[in-house]
Picture 1 (cartoon, rainbow, N blue to C red):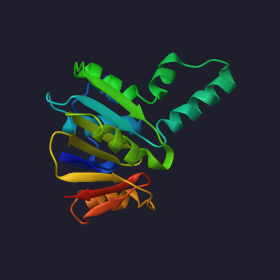
Picture 2 (picture 1 turned 45 degrees about the vertical axis):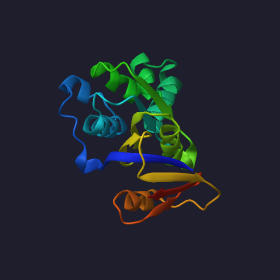
Picture 3 (picture 1 turned 120 degrees about the vertical axis):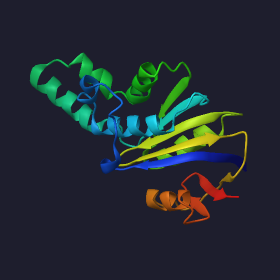
Picture 4 (picture 1 turned 60 degrees about the horizontal axis):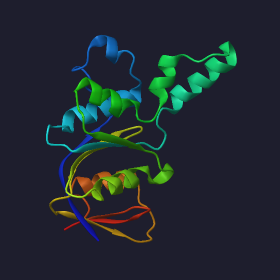
Length: 186
């Protein structure tokens, strides 16, 4: 069993997106997913964060389709579109804009992307991690592995939904069963 604490959290839906802190030229180049990620990171990141972890099941799937179509039509790919399609683009761009020199990581683990990202954050020894899950919605957590409040026990369980995780996060449930194990409030 691994203990950790969730210091702060946020849920970003399409109506909650706020990227007004970015210059207009940057904002208009961002995808919907980028805007969710930037909104979450801006809301939660502080100077005491040790690393950033982004997790997404689908990532920039729409951009990838555009790139494939462009290649089939024009036999070339825009370097700007390509660089913005990679899975770690948003945390890298956020780090660059905020002059953050700490590490960042991007994870995609199919149906288990949310829990894989959280597990990656909680196995880091003595750290504060700004974790962001983004697909249709954004879920942000500041996870501190130096203190308790929550626990994770790896075991075979039937995975519950992201909506169940949000209920768990908002104190509606005492535990959440993921495909990787059970998260509990202690």
